[in-house]
Image (cartoon, rainbow, N blue to C red; front, side, top):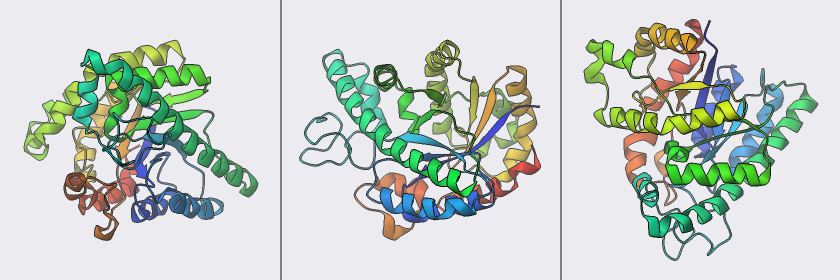
Length: 311
């Protein structure tokens, strides 16, 4: 049987997003979560989490959700000008902007140095919160399977070459004990062969799938070298609408492929809904409209509640 990890991204993106995810955690529906380090609501969201830990059936594994496209820089002010909007600490690069930095030789080395500063700051903030959560859980008798640092990123930005290089250098320099780095590698065949579902996918998500698949080889090499479990991710082509009906149709083929290849299958959801009043300058207006504010987030919340029926 394939080993699965039911995962939810974006804890601490907003307070309501976090409350929705906490509701899933209380029911034992999430194996792991990702925590956004750099929103102004971070501490409030973490306090909500700490209060609920004694009531949880178990403590999900917790990842640093590195964020370079939204929120505020956590690095020392003035030290990461490539990453922020001029005259502010607001993150100022899009995914495409980060991508471009990988292929502009006159900017790449400077960008990597600044990314390393930001990555260190974001990891340190979340790791301190994870340590506190683990301590609370231990005192309350709430178990957690986490053994080391876990890392992924908003919009899978850590897979972009210059970001990846900065990340692995920080890990090596700091001597972090790594348990997991998300490999955003999603098999395509299962989606292609279900022709009846083609019109239900956003074309841009196929582009994302192929691009991230190309970058996934380095993540596979890193996992093998550092004895991390190899993995597949499921949640790119269906990003923004991981509904239960399509999951049921696709799961047999996707699970069979992951089992055959000896990979953990991370099933990625975004079950938290952002409220209109929570959209601030820290959150991209386009992302809010197209993703965070959509009721589809509750479609994903429903799917999280039912997916164990398949496993």
